[in-house]
Length: 469
Ligand SMILES: Nc1ncnc2c1ncn2[C@@H]1O[C@H](COP(=O)(O)OP(=O)(O)OP(=O)(O)O)[C@@H](O)[C@H]1O
Image (cartoon, rainbow, N blue to C red):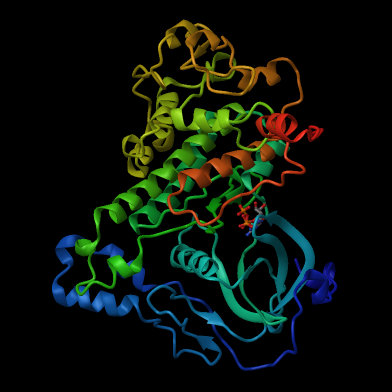
């Protein structure tokens, strides 16, 4: 689409982007994501002779494009940040449109158009920070993969004395997978379709994990679709929580290998990757039945009950939706939703499953999701089924277990289901808890919180009336 057809150049202040005066400079930079990290990851341990190791270490701390173009700057901290970026104003190259493509926690994603070709792209603006730089760096390192959203250009521009990183990425017309799923009524996808989605996203995750990068925020909103048709290509985006082992431990050692890394660092790395596998399990579950495995029944953000159910792996495969799903696929989900990170299926194991490869299934019998006394009692009602009492707390005794999980009752009783988007928010917060070393704490607004437990305590102790939600 050409910008002449529909867009008027927007006053940037309206977008909260007070672009300054434009300085025109000759430029020709096209980002080329060949990066030193590829080099250090592609080598097997055997290849790591001391000379090679030193060479890699050197490469890892140098930006090979540093001298390529005026306006391109090497990031200041070479050990932690290594991506090329422009320092001239983005408006010299792109027309920023008022069209909002999506809204995420870190702000709006806007449409922008390349001035010389009229091509549409998506623009993400991040306030410059260590976290933002990590996001851009890890995304840039992996963005040449066909199932990762490609980065076209990166700018470092200052607006009102606030330094920002501007990320121009390919625009994916099909939008995010959660919206696509909801737009068709949250009707479960077939196993074939889920297998195809997981195959593509799994390819991206394999690529990341093999580079020792954990995405840590895999969810349907962060899977972007090239189209709404059968030929859709699925791509992983939003590296806001992505992480790889601390460079100062793994890279600053004299020979540039993990020999000096303490076990907790290596352990954490494995933990982070297994967090991705758990998320893939949740995504698969949602796509196969139309509701998530874990959520609060009271429509509140992450309740104590939901938290406990996640921690204990209490979820169900209610028959109504899951009878038509193969035993193998349910078993895959069980292996992905294992509570102990080290027991969880790895990405390589997932990629070898019949669901992903499309090969005939072995038809092996499933194991139970979690062994709790009395769970067998429910088998007739819901396979692998567990939990849920009225107060959204984890049941203390088996007697409190309901035969039909409340999690799906709203579907059967014709009650309007909560939008998956709001449920996903809760799952996202659960993810925050699962991430080790997460650097954001979510604090609810006490005046508007609908959390029942909090409301009860507030009413009892402070005589403040309950919020009507
Ligand atoms: N390249 C793109 N093409 C099309 N839509 C996009 C693109 N990038 C982002 N979006 C839309 O914008 C939404 C938010 O984008 P993104 O996840 O990158 O932002 P965020 O602020 O990091 O969000 P989050 O809340 O997940 O942290 C996406 O869910 C998607 O709907």
